[in-house]
Amino acid sequence: MIRNLILAVLFLPFVHAGAARAAPGAVLATPGALTSATAATFTPFEFVRDGQVTGFDIDLAGAIARHLKLQPVTVNMQFDGLIPALQGGRVDFINSAMYISPQRRQAVDFVPYLQVANVVMVSAARQGGITGNDLSLCGRQVAVTLGGIEEDNARDASARCVAAGHPALEVFSFPTAQDTAMNLRAGRVDAAFDSVYGAVTLMHEMPGVYTVMGRPFGTDAWIGFAVRKGDVAMRTMLADALHAVQADGTFAALLERWNLPPAENVHTDAQAPAVRGGLLRGLSICWGYFASWLFFRAAMMTLLVTVISLAAGCVIGLVAALAQSSRFRAVRALLAVYLWLFRGTPVLLQIVFVYNVLPGFGLRLSALMSAVLALSLNEGAYMAEIIRAGLRAIRPGQRVAALALGMTPFGVVRHIVAPQAFRVIVPMLGNQGIGMLKTSALVSVIAVEDLLLVANQAASASFHYLEALSAAGLYYLALTTLFMAGQAVLERRLDPAQRLAGGTLFARLSRMMGSMTDAR
Image (cartoon, rainbow, N blue to C red; front, side, top):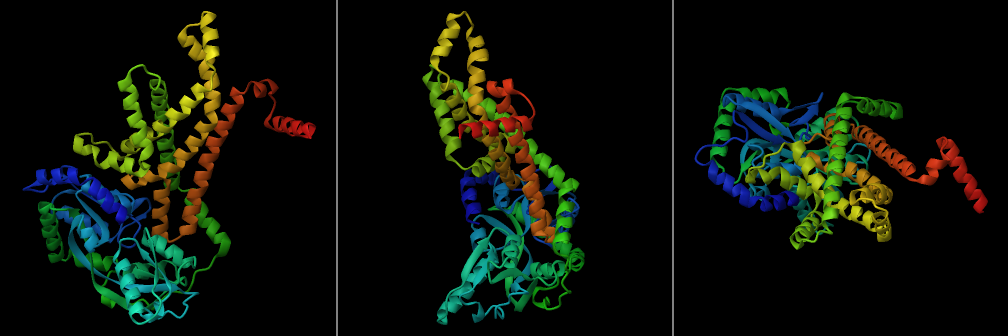
C-alpha cells in the first residue's frame, strides 16, 4: 500500500491534468469500452480459470458495461500496479475487491458495492488455543494482507491486548491473501485475518488444512470500485449503472451464483474431509502445470521479453560505450545523465513510469512494448559500463600496430579490438542475461502475463501454491540453464586453446582433469 501511494504521488501532476480534461463527462481509456484493472488472485472475486479471468467482480463489471452499452475489458496485473495504472489513465476504474480504507481514499475515490467481514483463520493441525478475535490472540504472530482492512483489525486487536495488560500481537503484512494463507499453512504464523469469503473458499478447496475460530467481525467494512481522485463523472456513471444492476436483480443473481451471502450470515464451521494424496499427487499436479499450454506460453513470453530487452540493451550499451570517448562535451554530459538516471532508480519504477506516465506526453505504448523499452534502457546503462571495460582491456599498442600495418580503422575494430573485447565481455554478458531473465518478472505489474504472474494466479485459483510455484521454478531453471549453455559455447568458441584442442565435451573434461592431476 505504501508503494502504491508513493507511485500515486509521483504521477499526481499528470493525473490531475488528465482529470481536468475529463470534465464534464466521463472520458474512457479506450473509446467504446469500459476498461477495468484487476489482480486476479482473490477467489471468488477475481481469479484465473482455464486461462481466463473470472469471478464475481468480473461478472459484475460485465453487467455494468452491458448496461452502459460498452464493451467490458479487463486488464489483469499485479496488485501493486493497480493504482498507478488508474492514475496513469490506462484503465477507467479498479475492479479488484479493493477494501475502502482511509489511506486509499487519499489516492482514489470509491463506489462501494459489497459489505464484507473478517474472521480469524488458523491451521487445522495447529490451533494453539486460539478461540477467535479475542485475548487468545495476545502475543501471537498474525498474518494479514498488506493494505487491507485486516491490517486495521489486527492493530485494533493488538491495542485491546495491550490495554488489558497482555502482550501485543506480532503482525506480519503480506502482499496478497494468497501469501497470507501460504505462511499460515507453513506454520510461520499462528493465525491469519481473512475475509469470510476467502476463508470459506480456502476451506472448501483445501479441506482439512484451515479452520476458522470464532464468529465474523468487522462487518462495517466495504469493498468498492476505485476511480481517479476527483473524477466525479466516472464515479457517477459507475454508481448509476451499479444501482440499475442492483434494481433489476442482476446483482442478487451474481451473489447467489458465486455463493456470497451477507457477511454476518456466513457459516464457516462445516468442512469437508481432508483430501490426501502425498508426494505423488503433488508431483502429478506440478507436472500438470508444467506441461500446460498456459505455463508454456507464459515462459515463452518471459523468454521473449528477456531476449529482446537484452539485445536492445546491448546495442544501446555499445553506442553509449563508444560515445563516452566522444570529443563533444554535450554528448558526454547527456550520456552521464542517462547512466546516472537508469542506474540510480529501481527497475520497477522505470517500468511503471514508461507504462503509466509516458501516455501523458502523447506516447502510449502497449504493455509489452513498455516493458521492453524500460528493460532495454535499464540494461543499456549497465551494458555501457561492461562494454567500456572490455574495450579498455585491449592495449592501445595493438591498435597502433594494426594501423601501422596498413589496416583501416574499421578493420582494426573488426579484426583486432572486437574479438578480444568480446571474449572479455562474454562472462559478464551471460550474467546480465540471467539477471534479465529473473528481472523480467517485474513486468507483471503492468499486465504482461509473464511466468510468475501466471503461476501466482494459478495458485490463487486452485490453492496448489507449492505445485504451481514449483512448476514456474522449473521453467526458470530450464531457461537459465539455456543461457548458461549459450555462454559456455561462446566462451569455448572464443578461446583459441579450446578450439585447437577440440573433441567432445567428455574429452575436454578429461583433459581438464588430467592437467589438474599433473599440476599436483
